[in-house]
Image 1 (cartoon, rainbow, N blue to C red):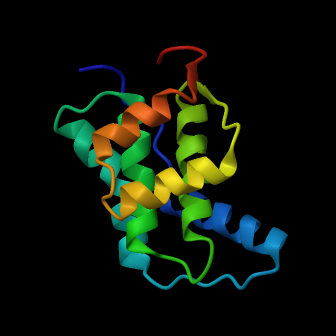
Image 2: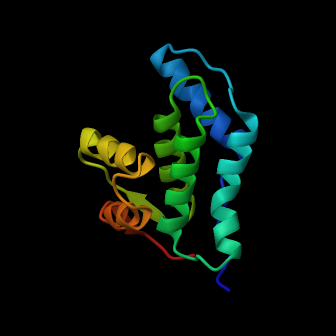
Length: 133
């Protein structure tokens, strides 16, 4: 089994949402604390079942947060920033050139217009492994 990644905890995800809501002037409130905990645990759970690809784990975090809708505002933004933060913590630089196209891809994966595997493939196009844990 490879080294365990650095996981993003629920309290860290809450801070990401608070920062984003402060920037935008939108209200901060947790709607679904259980959904937040579950979304934060998703990458670790699939890692324990043998999924070791860091981008795949980050995608699970993104989808989990976007679908569980744990906050009153900023769920997709928080999901994306959490995903990118997770990747950065685990040795990847992420370069997103077109936020609108990326946002559309996030919506497509959470509405199941594209598969999770297709999104992982899409996401890998934006990831540069700066070092491998």
